[in-house]
Length: 467
Ligand code: ARG
Image 1 (tube, rainbow, N blue to C red):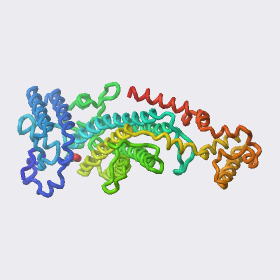
Image 2 (cartoon, rainbow, N blue to C red):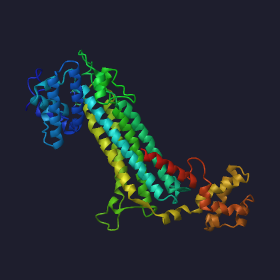
Image 3 (cartoon, helix red, strand yellow):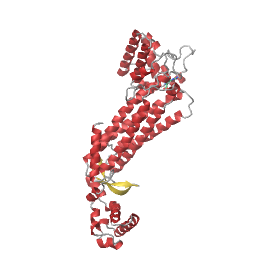
Image 4 (tube, helix red, strand yellow):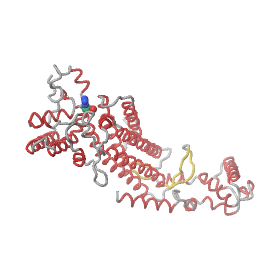
């Protein structure tokens, strides 16, 4: 087996045994970092030129060589070598083979700070893409609600019918959750956006590097354009807390998506029948010809398991690692790649599915018109007549029991029957069961009242238009 010209020269008499190489390679997955690796190398080389380590001609040759390699990777013609272990050594070894000055590129740099910078650059781009995807899903939810502004459904607690809400109000609850998810990713991004290059292997360098220049070249800057560099070389190469933050935000996002998926799965069932999903976004059964399954929602719910698992893997990976870099850290990549790929796919697919979903107003109406959903309104009615709420709750409980005993809907009891339970009921009691009026009475901020939900839909449509 050939040995790496980069890391094994001098010290070792032989290359690693084949099974060791196979066990320790990461090129099979970290090749994904090639763009970031090349970008980081060009910034590092530019800085080495600034401080006089590289000549202008050497910098030019290194840049041209890296750009040529980038072109070949992009075109799929670059050959990755397992014996070169990882993306960093594959690219640098090939560069050095083509361009002698490539041997100067690793000056004052270690793969420890190199991999830290690569993964930060990569994650920053992923967060930017993911936040865009989350915006799309929010738009899809608002869009579905806006297509059915008048549709009412029962709201549930304990999966038992509770009180009427508008379909849009239910969907907007997820828009709010996603907004907080988005905030968590943007918050985590600030701590991802710090440049560790210059930390070296563990203890920086004796050479007069310009860390700030590298940071600016790589976009590691704050809102005012000031370079952001890590402040402790040992911390810079050894912590992956920024990956954990991302994985944690992603796990919570997944949990939210899973809850949305579960609602979709319930709603599309024959038992609920509140929505229909277009054929292209459902799948059939290989045996039962009548089946139309909500597989996108089910897979989204299912994939939450691995996203939550990835968070646990990362936390467990870091626990007990002595300072500073340890090879264990190579295990971070597959977990974080999988997390990003999975949540981005789920967010995009759920958005596409909702864009091809509609409410079924008749079934929604039938379910929302259950007068029992207004039992709380009936108690509020008694409160307005001066009755203490605890007593009103008890009285309405007796009304419900009576209606249930006679198998009659609550709103069909006569005034005499109401008054037989409590004389506080008056002839205006029938108005309590007018669902449209009941929805108009819910005027609190955040309540599912007719005007309130319209205002919320408008607010979100406006907010998302600029997003
Ligand atoms: N492939 C390694 C990783 O992902 C790169 C850093 C290796 N550094 C080292 N000193 N072996 O962590």
